[in-house]
Length: 277
Ligand code: SF4
Image (cartoon, rainbow, N blue to C red; front, side, top):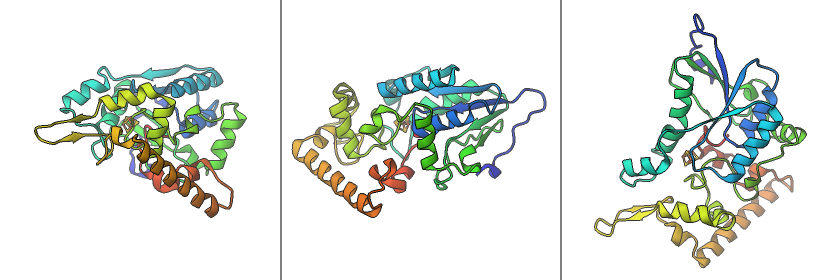
């Protein structure tokens, strides 16, 4: 993965070392793992302004653990501005303008033209993921977990030993990122409604229907959030989720891990790697 990227020109400016934290378990574990290993490591968090309170809480815990400031990076414009700019079209896995505008741009602006080594928390057991790879020639991404064969169990142990555990949202959600992230599973939308009804309402308010053209701008293809939370639909979503959990529990003979409960590797592939590490 790293071979394809040029090493930044380190001739006249000092190289900066930056670790971007998403508020998820892998990037947080990487911060724990790298602590004390690199002098002047800079920690940043690209805040979309649409994050969960559990994420802020976890970032703050991590900051205390690291005894170093985690710098918050934000776009000058908020999510609503971009929705209007794109005529109400919500981001999806294909366009993903949200990642570009609210995460990548602030990150690249922060870096400027400085030569940078960017530390990415992809694990050794996720060879299919690529993480944040900048097209800017002054940024080189490195993957310490891949290089040092750090896997899922190691990450979980590191977080436990550091006294951090997992972010609270893992009780009802599989990954970090915006509360309305279109990558989330149906059961997670149900979880959002139960755990953060106000945020669910906010997410719903972004959906639009054009009675003239019949166009529907929804987070999920073919189903609005109002349709998704109808009692009979919720019952079916729960039923499907329970069945899947059972299937996976049987497959793993009771040795269930977080990633198994939430859908395993196939599901992880359907995620945004700068937001969901
Ligand atoms: S978490 Fe999801 S919605 Fe938020 S910026 Fe990333 S891909 Fe977009």
